[in-house]
Length: 314
Image (cartoon, rainbow, N blue to C red; front, side, top):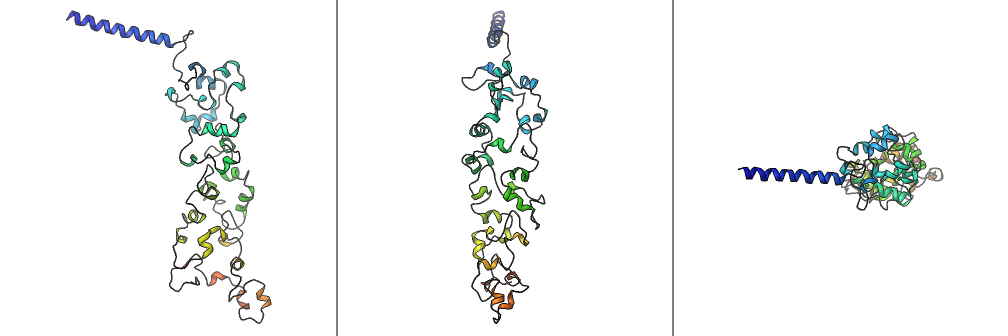
């Protein structure tokens, strides 16, 4: 029994001695703690100084309340390096105070900025950024987003999406101020309700489907069809007749009725152009253009399922 106790005591002392030696070997000459996270392969541990050192000079309180500020959990230092996760090891910068010794996104080429952000933001709606329209035009994440000083939802640099997008797409966003009903102006929608600025497999960075019609009918399901009698411009593209970014005409039409219809229907039993009402004074159809619109009779302009609905009549 005494021999068994002696063996147990010897093993315990050996374990304590080994643990003490490992701890002493892990500390540097100055007794630095191993609380710092390990860096990438080939990166010395001492190159990372920790977020506590960063905020001793850069006391960015607004950053702490952002999603990026909450993403770096100091309780799990092995999983991240806080500020240095994006800006790189900061030991040299903290020692000399030289801005050139730390990664600055404002001084980096756009491709490098995107590459850094894509190490985390590479899924869901960010997955198609590489090669997207904005990427091809040499834009990057920090063109629209700010980690340290965001102004709007999604950490964008402006208070609203409209204000942000209008910095480049002024000709498009100005259309929302036309006096007809506009859901974006009324805050019922935003630009990203239809577009994905981070990349899309659709035309014009549209979110849904492979055509403009599939996007529109994702909300306007009653116009989806299929119909027994189809209206050609409807099946081709909704924007043939509608201006989705704003219009001065009812129902966001690109032109008023009957001018809109007469752009295509130039030969018919009705006056093919607005001028025929004056030229064909002896025509029986000349009076049909006054104070009337095509949709007074042809109301099913998106398509008809009636057996006799070839003319899309009501």
